[in-house]
Amino acid sequence: MTSRPSPLPRVVVLGGGLAGTLAAAALAPHVGEILILERDSALPQTPAPRARLPQAAHAHTLWAGGADAMEELLPGITADWLAAGAHRIPIPNGMVSFSPAGWYRRSWDPTHYLIGAGRDLIDWAVRRRVLGMPNVELRTRTKITGLAGDGARVRGVYAEQAGQDGRQAAQDGQQAGQDAYGSPGLIEADLVVDATGRNSKSTRWLLDIGGPEVRETVVDAGVRYASRRYRAPEGTETDWPVVHVPADPREARPGLFATIIPIEDGQWHVSLSGTRGGEPSSGEELFEEFARGVRHPLVADLLARAEPVSGVSTYARTANRRRHFERAGLPKGFVVVGDAATSLNPVYGHGMSVAARGALALRGQAARRPFASAGFTSRAQRAMTRPAAAAWLLAVGQDRFYPGAIGRRPNLADRLSARYVHRLAHTATGNAMIVERITDVVTLRKPAGILAGPAVLLAAALGPRKPLLDGPELTAREQEVLARPPLRSPHTASATDTDTDTDTDTDTP
Ligand SMILES: Cc1cc2nc3c(=O)[nH]c(=O)nc-3n(C[C@H](O)[C@H](O)[C@H](O)COP(=O)(O)OP(=O)(O)OC[C@H]3O[C@@H](n4cnc5c(N)ncnc54)[C@H](O)[C@@H]3O)c2cc1C
Image (cartoon, rainbow, N blue to C red; front, side, top):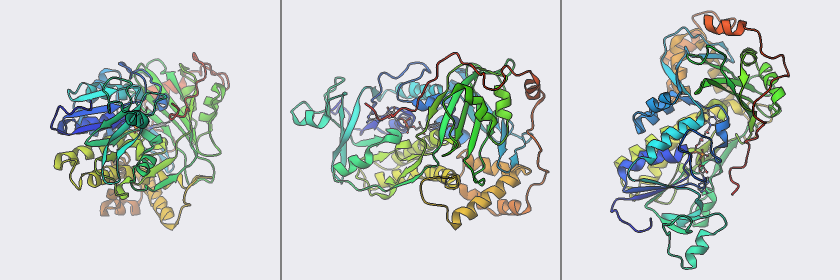
């Protein structure tokens, strides 16, 4: 792979997760070859779990803005998901959501959607299409240990098989970047894309080659997840809504969240989470009890009528962490995508959509100028930061307010902005136009700036046009399910699997 058969640029993507495969899809039309290097063992050929994607045990929301971007990068991907059993759930009709300002109405025309699917299914479909591209190659069980080059230009990476040091091997005279699996050494590239996720070492790797220091901002509400899959009650396997009861950051207590997402195989993926001081435990007997303690018991009432089909998995590495590569003056030939640049508290469901919108932005830059040109790295990094920054503001605008949150305390601007957001949410309980604008922003289809337009400001000043609902708007079928006798009394939930803790350190070799 180090011989240079093509005059077109070669790209090396570090990490074969969603951001890495989407970046490969974005760049494939503009390069000779793309090599994706992934430390995990062989990636599954089916929508099956893999070791280094522990978050797949937790419910994932793929919002319209992210799904649209993936469809643009990989035309037909939505049909692939749906053929594999995913659901395309309309918004607002397909969401029963108890916002801090009250229940949202479902009777308005659908304007947006989300994809309800297990994370393994989403990634598998993307991976299958990307690895089917003629100029994309995946090499698994390959761990990146550093960058090659200097502060002005990255020329490749060092890779190793477990236990071997790529730099040392290269110095020892091994043929640089031998092609055979497991040969450690230097792998040269015209562009290196870091997609190694939340635990990326790029900030250190850059310093190692004399590159810039990269500033980091952290806001950590201490969120812990507990998740479990249920068999959907009979008759609810299709056309079932997402049910979402989020926390209210204005309350002076830990935030508690509960969400049911209908996924493939007639299952519900259920995630519960709590901020610092309110974390859910991994105990199966406490799962539904936690769901009963959130702001409304609807999720618990539904779970009591469904059968668990998995144990409880937990996860707690959920801090919002933004590494400001776009301000660092990166060397040429190097960009950072996905969680490696901005990782977000997952309760807002934005990581995959940020990766997808970032990949679209990368494609736009790659179409405009060569990788080696002076402006490519800085422009591409800035363009990819825009969707990430939008999601960042949505997350930290709430997370700063939870008790014990780590990071800068909320200032006056944060408080005013939070009050305006609450006013919009209040207006949205009775104004379809405001629901649509908010959903544009939450699904990452449009930038948050649209919420400051004159029509929105006026609507917010006037407030909702309809009275507040005193309970969730439920269809006859949904009410019928709730009228069924519960399958369990509290504390007696059972599971077919044993309890699984997926809160592993993904950085372990
Ligand atoms: C509990 C939880 C729930 C979530 N829910 C949602 C949701 O509802 N909606 C949503 O959009 N997002 C959600 N997310 C976020 C989403 O999972 C991430 O944003 C997304 O996985 C980021 O993809 P990535 O490719 O950047 O990173 P990752 O998925 O972490 O992939 C990184 C890849 O790089 C590889 N790698 C790492 N280091 C090396 C190395 N040195 N050498 C070679 N390979 C390496 C890893 O093995 C891995 O395959 C959630 C996250 C969590 C934790």
